[in-house]
Image (tube, rainbow, N blue to C red):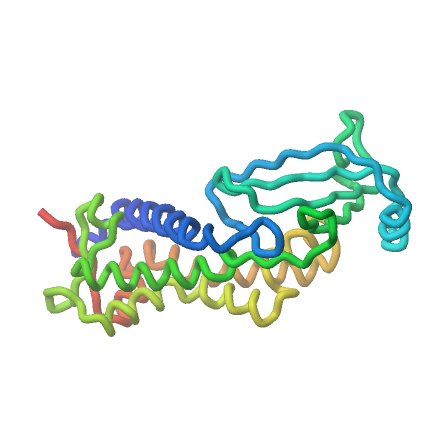
Length: 252
């Protein structure tokens, strides 16, 4: 049976996602101002916090929402070393080290440079998956079945009959390849309550546990069925390769 080059394909995919996601990050960075438009999804994030006393109006605001506190943590966040906004964290209690306790009820409020509450938007979080997929499709077509990761791993996407794939076939293959991720992304866009950003905090708090586990279980099953099972059942003949009539070959 023809080899499927799994380790090479897996390594190539990891390289491409890291490189292209960071390229998209820096493409969007000039449009972020750290106020309302903020960065997200950098490879590394750092947070610098300091304790600040709460004004009487702020105490009333948080108390009305179930957290009585005299102080809060004013935190500046940096993505890939770039400033990405200020957040005020107010918790119901702290641990012995003075940090927010794991079981504390915490309210976070995004602030601008004047200390006023804002509703931030995170363009990278929404645009990154779309732009990364578009770059993968475009580069794969223009480089005749290769991407930066595939070049390093010396593999190439071709038609089953041989030769480079046309744009339509490349588009079909890459879209099918990331179909589970696209489905999860669309779920987060059109049904925010089911996005990972909302599901994970619910899991940590122990709320709606049946819904959370059902969502995570279904998502995990889809990923396994689409990306893991073919490695065992079809010796790596991935469903998106079969459907788009493509194959991955090793270059000599």
